[in-house]
Amino acid sequence: MENLNGKQRDNWGSRLGFVMAAAGSAVGLGNIWRFPYTTGENGGSAFIIIYLVFVFVIGLSVMTAELAVGRRTQLAAVGAFKKYSNRWTFAGVLGVISAFFIMGFYPVVGGWAMAYVVKTFTGLLSNASAVGDSFGAFISAPIEPLFWFILFLLANVVIVIKGISGGIEKAGKILMPTLFVLFIFLAIRSVTLEGAGAGLEFLFKPDFSKVTGETFLAALGQAFFSLSLGMGCMITYGSYLSKKENLPQNALIVTTLDTAVAILAGIAIFPALFAFNMEPAAGPGLVFVVVPTIFAQMGALGYLFSAVFFVALTVAALTSSVSLLEVVVSYLIDQKNMERKPAVILTVVIMGIFGIFASLSMGVLGDVKILGVIFFDFLDILTDKIFLAIGGMLLAIFVGWVVKKEDLQDELTNSGTVKFGLFNVWYNLVKYVIPFAVAIIAVAGIISITETGLMLFGLAVIAVLVLVSKKL
Ligand code: PHE
Image 1 (spheres, rainbow, N blue to C red):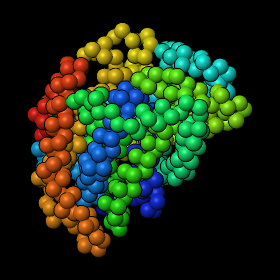
Image 2: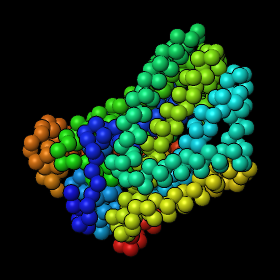
Image 3: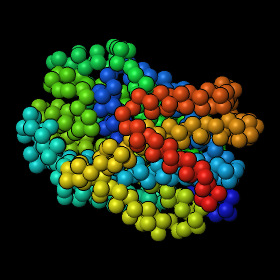
Image 4: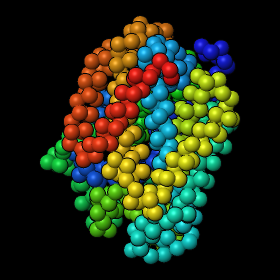
């Protein structure tokens, strides 16, 4: 298929291939590492309810919109916006910047997961009560995590250089189902531990007294992050999608899978956490501490499961990070006429530099604060709490007010050959409800959040992008 630049466009090999790749992008550290600890920090069940509402009302609609724009234009994020109006280029570029920033810390955590495969066999499980301390010591060391980070980044290079159907698709197809099965097993193990009931209560018995403006922003940011939205990733993946596919249906499948994995991760982690008398608000170390502790109490079998778990976590992270990398790479290919290989290498070198600082900020550079936070958190908070939410809002405004309604209907029904009964509901949500909802949540969150300087910085970056948009 030809896109607007007259270049051949790679296509997904099969239906299952796309669903797996898109689900692969969505399911990742966001579900398994971030969702549990964000839930823990935000008080549990009430956060989860708000999260679920955001996922299925806002997230699903935005995903449908992103896929439609991508396939309609046959262009990745920046090109897709630009095709309609030069003034909108900035929204695509914001996505590319988000991808860069997320890739500045995401592979660091991917590296931790990789390291834990090996650590399974080098003493990690021999003393259940030392798992927490050894995690802290590991991530704050200067060299070891860097080694794993670089290895993880190199794995990305190998996959993305091969192009869409060659690398990303194959990896996703085999390993996503493995992960799913493993989580079902872990969840069963966790809820059958003695004292697990308190964890289930924490997850499912709503306590709205803990809800603040920040809870809503955290839930919204997590929804966008987990579904890979608000930064052009699904636009890019949609642009590789065949004209025969039913977009709303695909969006629903991916959203449901992603949410199922997050909830499963919660069920795997919290009952065990309460059974072991650990702290729900323990932060980013949660999976790396709770899960090995479960395995450490399982004898020899624990070694096998731990190894498989961290391999699966690594792969889940990998199928997500390649999609982030692809956003930047396809921008360079589509807009800057670069070849794939140099585009990948250039991008990864810059991401590598970001990641080195992010990793070191967990230890030796821990005192260096940017706008009040360490570099790792700077990248994380900036993308998750501002760029993705605003990116999602911009996309909704763009689709609701710039793209023609008939074009959207045509794209979402494959020119009238498949049914999308909720088209009008979707359209009105995207046009009227989502832009306002996101704006209100963002404002409420930004007011109640402690990192005010960082928030203002994020908004300033977006303002600058708007001003220079003609040059992008
Ligand atoms: N959705 C991925 C995860 O949950 C992260 C991601 C964010 C990937 C944005 C692509 C774009 O881990």
